[in-house]
Every structure is written in structure tokens, then in C-alpha cells.
Amino acid sequence: MSPQTRKAVRFLQSWVINTAAVLVAAAILHNHISYDNQVGNLLIASLLLGILNAFVRPILLLIALPLLIFTLGLFTLVINALLLSLLTILLPFFHITSNGVDFSFGYAFLGAMIISVISMTLNVLTGNARVSGQARPPPRPPPSLRAAVMGR
Image (tube, rainbow, N blue to C red; front, side, top):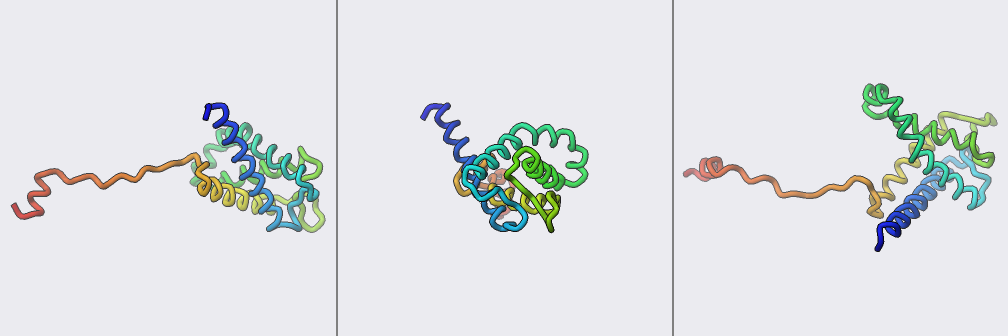
């Protein structure tokens, strides 16, 4: 498979995973997060969220670096909630509401947490995760230690 094809497949996988995560978040918080129940709107919202995560999120992470260090990375959840909230401004069909109020940061935070957990899980299950590990056998002790343990 050519590098361009591999990149396209990886992009489509990420988009499908992001779409599924937004769909699950909207289903769990169905009275608070909505996208006017059209598949095209869901696809557009998840695509725009992916674009915001790719381009705006790194800038926000850099600006908020002191807070990220102070909170041991938990401020990332607030940044994710802000990006999800930005969708309500950019897309007229995407809504985060609470008790009739057009915007609720609490439900944006919950939605961002759900989206993060679902997308992380799906990325690991599909092998699309950015993090990889390699199992190695434990190092062998030096010969002098082996001889001491064996009583020689």
C-alpha cells in the first residue's frame, strides 16, 4: 500500500471513530447534545471536531502548558470541552443545551469526556492508536550476581 493510500485510510478510520464517539456522546446525553438527527450533520460535526483537534488543540495546549503541568494534564479535558463548545458556535445545527439554555459547559465537559474515552478505546481496538509498546524480556543479571545466587 502506498504512503498516500495509508494516510487516506488512517484519516478515514479516524473520522469514523470520531463520528462514532460523537454519536455515542449525543446518544448518552441525548437531551443535552444534539446535531438535528441527520447523518450528514453528524459527519460534518465530527469532521470539524477532528480538524479543530488537529490544528487548534495543539495551540491551546501550548498556551495552557502551565495549567496542564499544574493539573497533571487534567486541564486537557477543559480544552476538549472548549473545542466541543466551539462546534456550537461554528455549526448552527449542533447544540449543547441545559434547561433551555443554549450553552452548557458542564454538558460540553461530559460530552468531551465521553468522546475522549470512546475514541481512545476504539483507536486501541482498531490498532489506530498513536502509542505503541513493545514487550521485552527482563534484563539478565550480571554473571557475578548469578553466581552468588546459585551459591558458587
